[in-house]
Image (cartoon, rainbow, N blue to C red):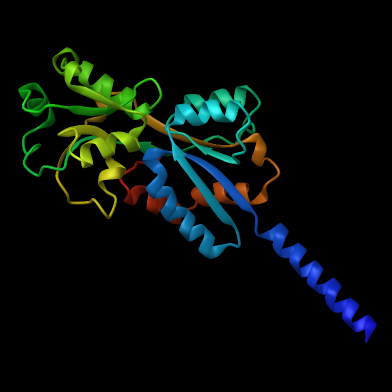
Length: 253
């Protein structure tokens, strides 16, 4: 009887150990523009594996600084190439793990369905709005793309006094959605969110008006021994995940 009980206890402990090592958590830092898309990918990933994805979203610049100071993320989905590259050079990202997971699209959006019936440059030059929202160009790649667009259209000086800056593209979108700004440059993926899609009006910015928004992911040093993190990065590159990425308005390399 004692042997049987001991065997059951050992089996339970062993089973618990196996579950622990096979069902790991992946701690992910993701640029705000990709959060909704990554949520959809992570939901599929969790359904097909025993792993859990814990997602934190914010500006790429702030995550970059946090990772430099030891933030315990396993994976970083940046909105640019520069920051993952710098982390790799600093020994904070695993060499060879970087890849472009999406190419972003910038759009000028308004919740007013009549605001952008005409093309964007005409509306911007008309001055018939009080505030224009953009993400901070110093920390958010979509903000940098918005600034480049306005300068290439020779409209920067015309609108700069009407600009309100969001800390990241998520806050920028909120400024417009809440109508604290009548229109703003946001990620097209935010407008294609099923909860938003079809609301308002938009002008998709031609790609030649700003540098390409190539978004890269990397396995961070903290996640180097986390098999779940490696499996998740592989999953993001699989056809099913790539279909989700395209569905949300991104291009792929």
